[in-house]
Length: 118
Image 1 (cartoon, rainbow, N blue to C red):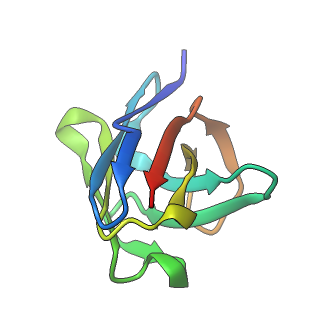
Image 2 (spheres, rainbow, N blue to C red):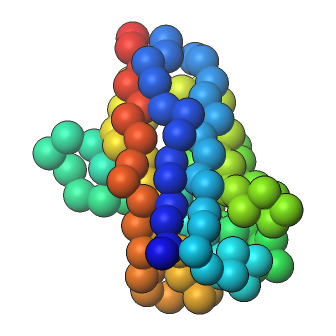
């Protein structure tokens, strides 16, 4: 059974940091790209970053310089380090898998809530 489980969300003050984890199981993790997305209340889903099977990374413009994606294939886990958090970063954060970063994501985790207070 394919699973993606996000953890690490929570409440943090503006300017603070959080590290999200996406733990994968049930598929050949090192052969897939993993992306991070978020959805704020009343808004559509927004792509943040992606790491390919060979650990290349890509970021949306708003994430560059503040967010860092990494993967540990030995632990079947992808991380999203988020620094200098802003209230507008408040959202549910999801990870998802795809064959390649730019392709369709075919499985999603349940999400983890990140709330940034001002």
